[in-house]
Length: 194
Image (cartoon, rainbow, N blue to C red; front, side, top):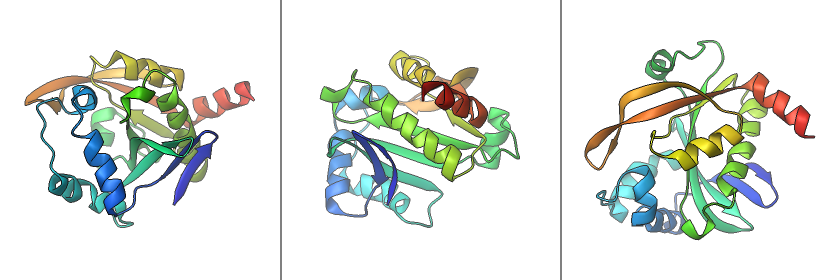
């Protein structure tokens, strides 16, 4: 399924097949990529990846796994999901806003620092606001990931609060920067850019 696209970006559902799992395996065994998302000490095998991400390729999963394509080439991973009740409480999200969360990374580091992650995020935001009717969207990068935070700010996200000891990174819990974008702010930014 194609969730969102705007040339040269396309975001499609990850498929339960060898090609997509191999692509993800290549990214999740790259020390450069892991230095931002799980820690270089993280060791993934193909079996680990299939066990963790395989269920996310199915319609029944609450987490929707996606592949980001740039000019037809697989360059990154994105997942989106409705926030759980625990997340809604932790984030102080609006209960009636149908809040979503997004996680994203560009796996091909030769495509870093080219604005591809920002373009992909903007495409997915439009899908979540228009198609899914989400009123609030959240991201929670590690505080030390300044590049991701700047990218999210370019998309209109605002810093909300620090989530202490929120994410495991190489065996140590790290603080994360919770960021929020309301559907109204997103629509206002779209009207101003067209």
